[in-house]
Image (cartoon, rainbow, N blue to C red; front, side, top):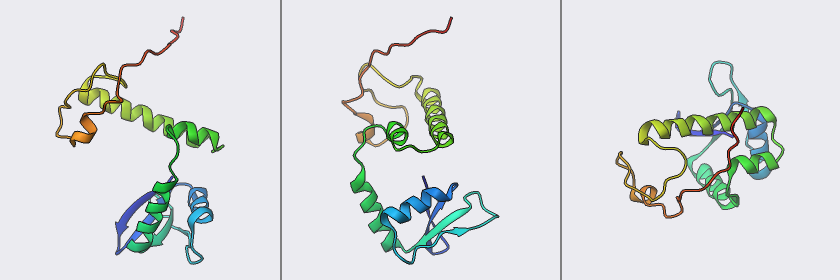
Length: 139
């Protein structure tokens, strides 16, 4: 997992784990891609790219998406358990954020207009339907 930002005139691919950038290089890298390590930033490892190179990489990454559940795909790809734990924690925190904003959990009976000014494509999602979930209560 990495973050992409435009900073100091270039695209910076930033990561908290250098193995994520190493995997990116193995899959899509050019000979000149170099991982730079810094001690004074929140993302210690970086790759610097031109806007054109980033556009090509983003297009290639988008074309590779063939999963319907990112967390499940990560567990299948044998990433380390700390990473899986972190992405599940992020998922949970964002669900809590959603509940605070809209007063509901993961599923709704029928699509409805959101309270915030969102794009219509995100509001009228026909695939969002109430699903029955088997939950076991702890005794």
